[in-house]
Image 1 (tube, rainbow, N blue to C red):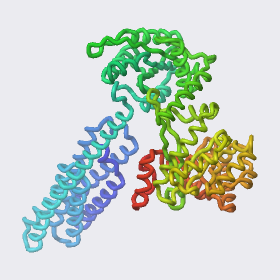
Image 2: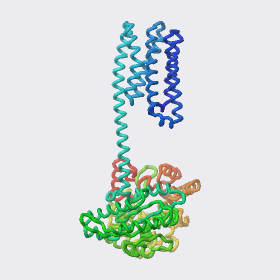
Image 3: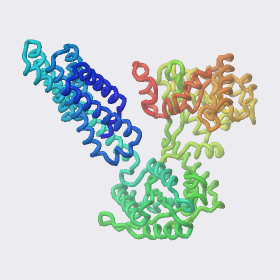
Image 4: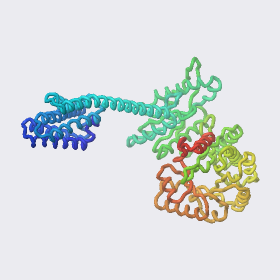
Length: 626
């Protein structure tokens, strides 16, 4: 209904034209009938315009009195159309002034044609207005007779049938578009729900959990706490191994059902991954949280009945409270995860609340070290590639190789979890050589003008035979040395710059290229750039999309870009997420860009696909997979 009143200006323009036409006919002819028609036209037109402008300012009234306003619009529109047609018919009947007949008849017919198209979304009203504005002209033409008027009558008839056909055609097109839009919206809602829902349990998945936790935090009443319960089933792997995944899925579904029954109605419940679940709800105090946690543990300790199998599983739980154990969702989740770890260390079916004294660094590091060595041996790691794009041409110039660890039980482990452990334990040497070898094999299949970038750890560089290992890796892959870029950070030069210099000089002598990564976050000594054979500088993302971006960060980027141009070095802007950031760094002089705006890191086959599409002249931006 509101759409009928959404264009008060156009309604006012039409009203002014109608008032002018009717008033002119009345003033020139001075016929009483035309004077009354003109008065009626003015009254109806002004009333409709006033109502339209009033509703444009107060949409609340439109929503409250929708049906009444719709009826008023229809009555006003039909009345106005009839008065316009009647004015034209009476002017034809008077017949004293030919140009008046032309004026009123033309306006009535143009009005009928125009309104039939404007209101095609409501064909009954549109056709009604068309007929009411045209039939008086038709009737008078037939009544008076004569060659000219008979022809006019015929034209009016054909016009009426033609516009009725056009009105229904437009109506059908509009209806199909609306149906298609509604269908698309519903499909989008369904896809969004599916993307946030765990298939096995029907609960939220990790993405859905993140969204709902933010929403729940925003609704958190003053003085209340948000309790987060992180659960891990104790013997779930045994169930899967002995009874099969179908039974395991049944156990997961039953856990979800019990959690939904025991948790408050307003609680957020999700399957975080594998056999881990998270529940979050509002509590008044720690005591209420303890009661609910004990009830959940007790309920899950009862045996499950799945397809005739009696399964005793139980669960371990870690609990944390916001704001007691962290100021934000991420911190509280880390606290609950840490509490869960201590619950599992303490035995099965245990409950632990977060305590600041908890620490698991040594245990966790040893666990990651062991599992990481096994993952390399079992080929559980993957290499993903994030494109670095030429900001001038939009072409992919380089892919940065990034390692991903998809743990068979724990799901995806973040690089910031295992890379520091790998560096501290020395596993980074084996891991780094493996990453270089895999990246070189993938890059060897790409076009010759596309390079691959690999991050190097200082520990890896200091290992005996590091340079030889890299050269052997690219030789075995059949990758020319100049197509390999090694990214190093400024921290590399602090401890052993002499050894680092020999390493870089040896590889650079074979054609391997070097890039200075995260420039601006460390010591940022220009001496490094002057001393070592860098061909590329990567400006840290904090200068592009960090919280402190502004005039100072822009000036720094421009200065680095100008220096790079003078030294004939490529300047890469990291962390690009928006077109505004892309344009800003390009205007500042950066030559290359990297970030989610172009693409996230993708598997090797998708990287190859992006290059193939680019070479075929199709879509060149990597956002196809973003």
